[in-house]
Length: 117
Image (cartoon, rainbow, N blue to C red):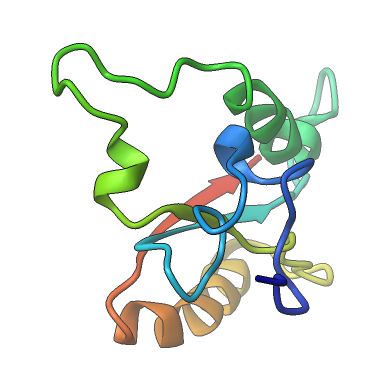
């Protein structure tokens, strides 16, 4: 399988999953990074949050001892969309842009996780 344009491969996807588990045709969960920085007054850098979370997620244990399974397999996988560029939109305009982007995916039954800063 080859990932379609706009989707991240193993080096940049949530949990570091390999194909087919990171393929959008199969995955029941999509992760959407939305880096943004708007009102930082002390130490800027919240726009790097989504990338840092994705990188850290690649180090977690995939097996859940309570559930006795690897949950991502139960969901059909987890696919990571390339970062959404808000193009300077903030506040309600940013929310509207995110909603417009994810609505088609929700419409086909995907569960969307949005990572933002």
